[in-house]
Amino acid sequence: MQDEFELFRAETKGIKPIKQDTFVAPRQKSGQKKSHLRDIREKEDTLFYFSDEYEPLLNENDGVVKYLREGEDSHLLKQLRRGDFSPELFLDLHGLTREQAKMELAALLLACESERVYCASIMTGYGTFTLKKQIPRWLVQHPNVRALHQAPREWGGEAAILILLEV
Image 1 (tube, one colour):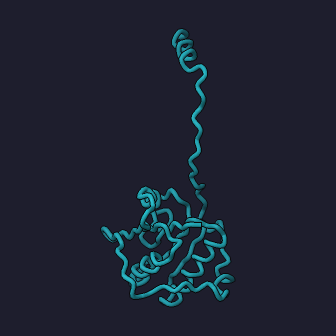
Image 2 (cartoon, rainbow, N blue to C red; image 1 turned 45 degrees about the vertical axis):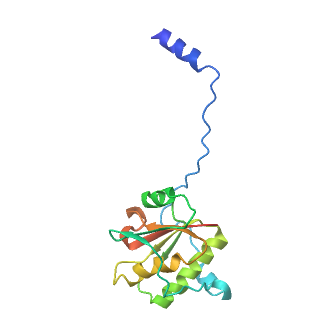
Image 3 (tube, helix red, strand yellow; image 1 turned 180 degrees about the horizontal axis):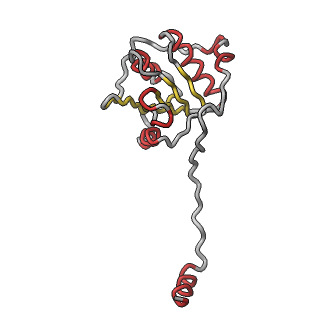
């Protein structure tokens, strides 16, 4: 047994440890970071124009909505699905009209840009599915949206969408 330890030490002498340089965002509990959406929404430049007529080619298999901007790593969608990215801002759209939701969405995207937030969660709820179907169609029009995917259970499941942004 002692000979095996000596042999191992002799074989591994001079080996440098592997450097871990991969960043994995820490998970935060819901609501830890609060945004000033109301203040930002009041600014004149918050309204990004979202077209209601635009019909993007969204990948909607089995009711799961996902989108990946052209040129992005396809692994991003898998990371979003697994919950590897922790949303730092949360937007709840329950009970809002389409126009109100559009304004809130524009304010969220501006808040993410100004606060350098790369991942956010949008709660669409179940309801009539009007917002759940429309929100991805609006999001893919914004130039900062890199990817989106139905949220994993811990971040809202079928009633939420996780977005990954370029900041």
